[in-house]
Length: 390
Image (cartoon, rainbow, N blue to C red):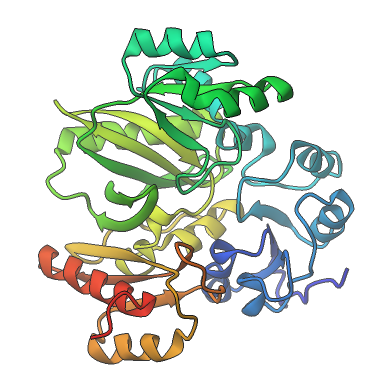
């Protein structure tokens, strides 16, 4: 495996396992910080491999490939949470510096372990249980009320691995697979939330932490389509308590790097934690253009144990709109049109092939008129997608 070229002056090499868009969006901040990036990419044309010169091809499940890649890096971090436990253990045995550590990452990889740990810490969560049988599902549903939410503990994202069910028989196929693997399902009460919010923060190995303003996330069919920063009309006390909970989770779990804590806001000024992500996150894409320090720069600062930058907002509002794949792949003309139509819109495309529903980019726009910003962000995202043509 070819070693990455090191910058003179003693600057480090940061390795990222996975060549997706999160690794790709670290490229600009890495250049500004003066550090070298290397990514273990799934393919030569992976999103990050298109813009990062050091991008050896290898699978995150291949122990030998991962070890050879990590040997050329000063610190290793992750584009996703799907690196298997045996690979993480091999990295640890080799003395690889990893952020987050495997001991922390497990709580983003396994939702059952996450729920148990957060409950032990007293962090507000939906009522939950594990289940391997129809009887266990029925008992939990009868206790908390139907419908309930069922999740596969590992591997789900963007609505995958989640079902809302009205009776236990709707989970027969999942239960059969769970029993065969001796891996219970996670069951949760379906909470009556008013909206979804997210706390995004970064924590360094030395324990410094910084949190961005709490944002509102808008989901469509299980996929985040819009983020508003800061969350409109959010009670100051709720924002403070949610942020404190996020910081406490990061500290107690020993998280290093960026942590996203996705939450449900409940009636009466309360909240419960929905999910954790230990990496830059969709809820923080707005920060690339709307904060003093964007999440990708902050993640690199954190994993290198550099002093963290200010997470302060640069504008009254910033709106992020996700661009999802449509039915045409010729994106460049639409990209140019959006730039010409609204020069204040920042469009970030990921160099990914178009597939309906796939996240292929996002747009950010900032200013003082929230309704106007939401309309402009949606128009730009829809135009690139091809949902509209004018």
